[in-house]
Image (tube, rainbow, N blue to C red):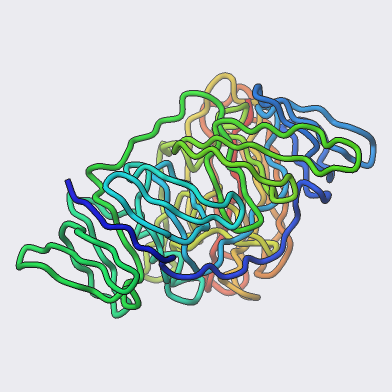
Length: 401
């Protein structure tokens, strides 16, 4: 079992996150049933009963009946603690011990995390959204039974971490000890073989914070604010974090395990891509066809599917599935280019066809009745300029029960 000395000082410095909505300001409110509106999150209890303030009064919803509220804030370039349950925590590393990591969160303050609950720490991801996205995904996706240091020049060193000091990290490698300056370390991967394994058995939610964190939360308690006072939220995550935050720090809430099944969490029945020339594109779960995070309408979408023309992706339906819904857009990575037509088939019958979707245009909402069907197929066709930058996003693609 590897061991580490205390760092004595924070490793790297957090950058200020972009401003966004919060529980204290109105934001998109998308229930599973009924019209969309905007609202402020007022309260949440241990049973996931939510209250929102809208322009038509207070709206009460069980989290299972909510598609999403608000919009997540993309994290700053770093540092980021990548949790074993899939969450992201914006925080600086203060010290690393034998079995715990101590961090300083701009929202929660000091936190102690079990090392088994931490997959990696991104100290200095590369610049540029495309490079950063893929680098972070690769950092989280490391397998094996060793610790790793990712250096700023692209080198990767495997071994057993022995000590972390304010100025350097000591790593025991196969060829002997190595001492690496902290300034050269872009990322740290903790032995994947020791990471905790999480499987949600009840409703959880993605909760986004104004500091760029996106956490998998088992329990959220937000009491209504007393007159003249701000309310305080308590969050308990799947990775064992219990934190307290001002309600104004909450910017996003997306339940998982309620009445919505996200297609990105399901195995497709079939997938087929027809290249325009010779490049074959895969579909991607929660990523664009090019492998980047989903972005459209000036925001990041944690859930959805990425496809490229021309392609067909098919999923089996369950008897309880009533509707297929999504927001359709060309990903922001295409800029003003890219153009596709999207279709939805239930069994072999076309139930929806879009107008031509072009880069930079606002997302188009789709809702298709799938009751009685056995399969739903999502189709992306060529439009204006063959397949040039045809990054079609099925944002928040979901089957509603």
